[in-house]
Image (cartoon, rainbow, N blue to C red; front, side, top):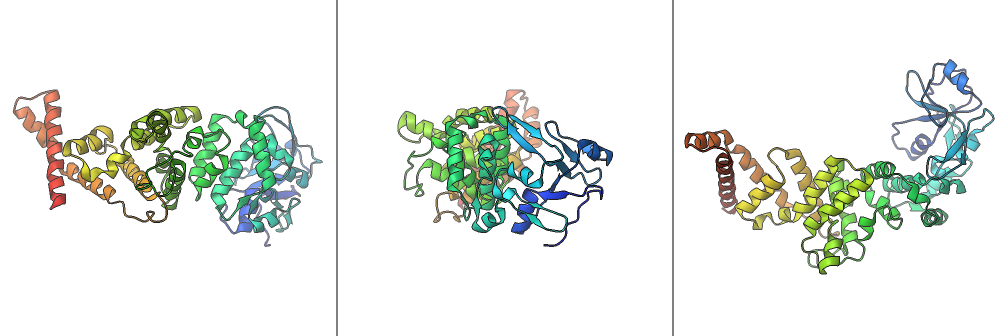
Amino acid sequence: MQKLQFNAPKELSQVYLVGGAVRDKLLGRACHDRDFVVVGESEQKMLSLGFLAVGDDFPVFLHASSKEEYALARTERKTGKGYRGFSADARQEITIEEDLARRDLTINSMAMDANGKIIDPFDGQKDLVKKVLKHTTAAFCEDPVRVLRLARFYARLGPEWHIDDATKKLMSDMHKNGELSHLVAERVWKETERALMEPYPHLFFETLIEFDLFPELLKMRGVPQPAKHHPEGDVYVHTMLVVQRAADLNLDLATRFAALTHDFGKPVAYEQFGKLHGHEKLGIEVIEGFCQRLKIPKKLADIAKLTSDNHTHCHKINELSPKTIHAFLIDKMNALKQEKRFLQFLDACACDSQGRGPTLVNKPYFQADIAMSYLSSLKLLDAKKVVQHALDNGKSGKQISEALRTAEIDNIRQHQLDLKD
């Protein structure tokens, strides 16, 4: 292993690169953030060397020029519930091996010195080769955030990896004993947001589905769908395929979130009516509750609700009347003023259509092109001219708005005829 370029002052004799940076280096992956552990030093020594103290609960410092994070080696002791219920011991006698023992997974519990030597007391390198996610010590169960992090790593690394059976049991025990109930909403969403942007986001949700963190998804299990339109299976299977399709297409967070939530209303519709009709509007309230519970940003909540309410309109755009298309594009989607959001919506609809198993995953979603052609036609309409004409004819207030609406519907009607020619 080649030597590393450390920015640490020469006065610090025991400095180690730790955690994800070592893991990613061994995996041959790019690493954008490097964290370091310093052994055998004190807070006073770090401050005297120009480091900036940033840790509230334990001694963490920023390098003055590189801004990389340096922490004193420490151990942790459980003192309460949740991920904040710890006390730290950062005495100068703490070794690098003791510091690594407090970390979550074996593949994250390695260190590397400036000469490239690996310190690996928990066989993280072997688990990298075996592609297994395994807890470092039984202390894993003391911090509920570690369950979320493990699921996110799984979403990053992919289905070739697996979770160690003993680790699965620890996670299940944490659910049963109530430790996961101490997760705060902001942290659940932060890890979920990150997981949605990983290459395999469906693995995050599949790992956590039994732990009462996402009851909206759990309720999808076993809800049947018409085989003619959904050969892939139930609503949960479909939703995971849709989210994964959004990731495969490298779509943005808003689109992936809309893909995740677009069918939240199906379990409600099935419970109330024994069928899925009306699930679009029923999903709005479920999404609102989901977003409130996890404190999800309003911008994401808005596109999720719009997608739930309107995705079947988009699927059937060739069957809609000009008035209905106008209501869809202008009244509901506000596509002329919110074109970026409309494009995100169309991408989510495409994922919905293609997330139905291997025979449909590459089927072109022509409805998006048609929807955009209607929007392009409407953009060519001279709205100022329409308004001026209405004013010249003595109209005012709502009459002007109605004149513009009539012109837009006429534009859509003509474009519809052009498409049929």
